[in-house]
Amino acid sequence: MTPSPDTSALHDRLQRDGFAFVTADVMRRLLDAPTLDDWPAFADSWNDLAPDTYLAASGRHRRRRHATFSADADGIRREAHQPHFQSLRYNPLQGDIQRWFEPVEPAIADGASLRRVLGFCRDCFGALAPATRRWHVEVHQFRIEARADEAGEPTPEGVHRDGVDYVLVLLIDRANIERGTTTIHAPDGRELGSFTLAHAFDAALVDDHRVFHGVTPVTPLDPQQPSHRDVLVVTFKAA
Image (cartoon, rainbow, N blue to C red):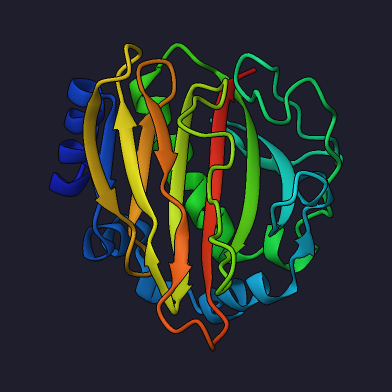
């Protein structure tokens, strides 16, 4: 099958720059979003995330759920629930800890929206690494909450790599939030680009071997009202 112009352009940017910002209109086409009847329920599931108790111990606050999958040419399969682990090399704040988070709910993990996102990632990242036959996939639902007296920190570990091969960050919702700019950096610290995920379906794709990424803290537009930034983070690593 001949790749669509959107897909070809995305591959070209990732190969050239090591990252790509994809606007919501393009991402909707890439995911064929109008056919995802369960998207409202998928997005609503961010209202039922569990507190990140590991981060709360550091005086920071966010909510999340986590799931692990495997992916290959034959399909995508959910694996047994397991901890999320990063070495101190990649996460100086919470590295070398087996962190157990509440699992992604079965209806969400098995639903059409998440499976469409995972299938897109498998095809996109697989085209960039055709020698990889099987992927270890982790899915993270994140809600960052900002308060009048405390900014929310999407990346409390700072500018970093995740210790995987590829990363997708997909904005699900943002309410009463300002700031939250994604920055991309070369290994020597030079900033290579910046952009803000501002609309549902805005996305960032990253070659984790080549670039570092981070997100500036978020603050409420109206300090008297609740505010949040909801993202889906998907990581692919050769198994």
